[in-house]
Length: 306
Image (tube, rainbow, N blue to C red; front, side, top):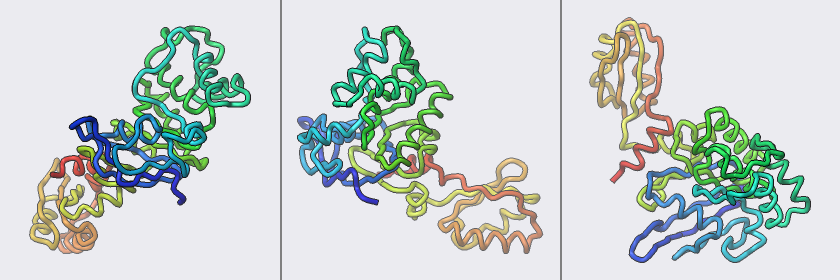
């Protein structure tokens, strides 16, 4: 996968405040989610990717160029800012049309109408943007970001204010854009929605990059965090007593009428042990479910690390 975004040893400070500290990563085509608690430096990183602010140290390269100095690169980046940045007196078509003109799109009228259709807004709606709901305004921002058919799309909390159906629609749209060979970077705090984008994440904490890559692989590398696995069976007490003291098992507790939750340092060893214990104790297994290999658990583990 060739890199479309390259961030090398980047730091950014404002006076004595260090917002981003020694961050490096590279991204190719597809969707990557940028995650982190408030104040982690996510928006600052996105601003540097778009050339809106320079790094205090290190380098940012987008499509092989400097987004701060190379206008040809800047034109190939579409940005959905977190902040409201609309001309309130204009209609959606006028606003997106202006974005197309500024980007040098050959047929700005057709491009604006096409971009609005992508986000399911009517181009002939003559109301001013001030009359639009929060969700509609978000979709207008997405339309203006896509109007020039950019190679890199940067989205800062693009799902805020959207109803469930429109959230699903935009998630699907972002996935299609990534599948088309473009690089999509999306910041969001709604973790169950981020999982639908895909498994590739960048996690920031306290201005640093805490982890990057497939979050399932990140979880597998967390040797200091026991895996929690729920096992449903016809005799949870017999199963629990058989697992106590087994290799790699660090905790066992009963849950509900048929559930046993096991904490293990080695999930592969547990699977082999579980089969033997169930056979020896004549326990019938109904379900084995990992409890902490989802994005929410991975995110919580990473940002809580000292």
